[in-house]
Image (cartoon, rainbow, N blue to C red; front, side, top):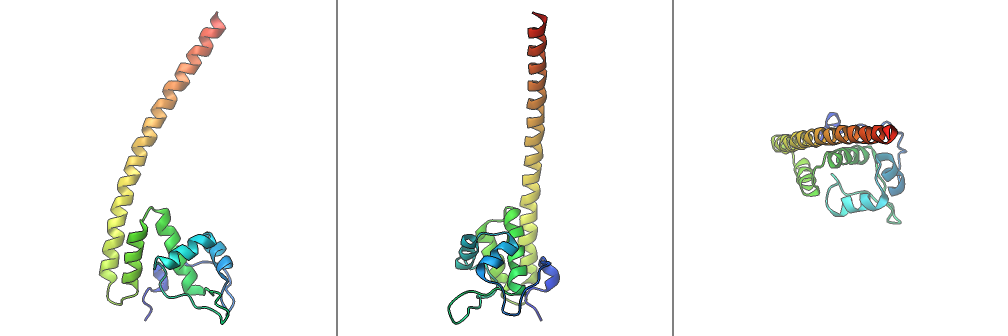
Length: 146
């Protein structure tokens, strides 16, 4: 059984050769820079060690890329690297699905709280914009009346 079933990771719609993708092609496929992909590897965020050719070059396969796409999504939601590292460690251990669920539910609560703060900030900006539009319109009207 898969440690992380494919239904629980994003599925990239790209063709991957049997030998896998180079680090540059893998980074492009998931929307990362090569430096960021190397950083994720150093930080222990990848599910498995990246296979390497005899010349030491990394090769990324379907599972690697799907996992990376999931990491990108988590980072885009604001999940901290430390929490992603915890999720990765849990994902390497069978029987930790409940703990993974809790990690995602905790992060979801944080995302919802941030979304509420963002909505409040947007409303404040809309109020300021409306006030400045009215002010500018009044100023222009005053200039034209003179």
